[in-house]
Amino acid sequence: MATVIRHTGSLTTAEVAALALSLAHLGAGPQSVTARRGLRHALDHIELDDDVIATTLSTLTTPLSPDVARRARAVAQAITSRLVVRIHYLDAAGNLSVRDVEPVTCLVHREHWYLAGWCRLRRGIRAFRFDRIISVESTDIPARPHLPERFLPFQRRSKTAA
Image (cartoon, rainbow, N blue to C red; front, side):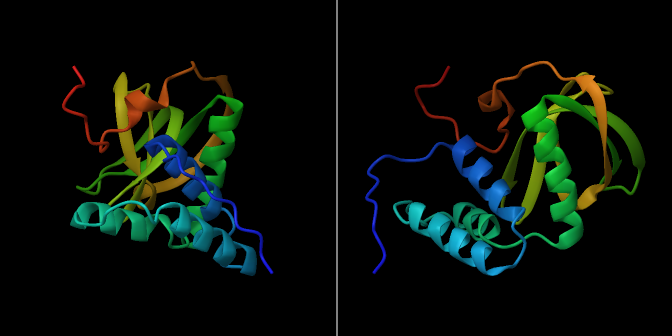
């Protein structure tokens, strides 16, 4: 018989993204199925009256393809180590660029995973779709500390926020 732990608090957007990214690394094995089921249970309290939220939650609990998962692992390691990554990125128009990015967090919006970070080329916050990142190279360049809350472009803002 399984032990059930009751949790009455709610998860922040950054916590959900970190949990989901960690699950993405597990691939499609038996532990990943159990872990994703656990994440779905943790998200049960969220009302799905919004199509964007429903699609996003579905993406959060779906395994990444092996290539995208490999790039996500490299980014997650850089976030943990606070190191800059060099990405080869193909934008929506098909233009390839090489960018040094200070990775801050990963997030999901609708059906896509994103790397959110400080792009040194554009000198600003950018979100890069994982399926458009061609490659991720680790560097030994230290990244500055950043607050993840400032890097969540799809997060709903509360009416009380200034």
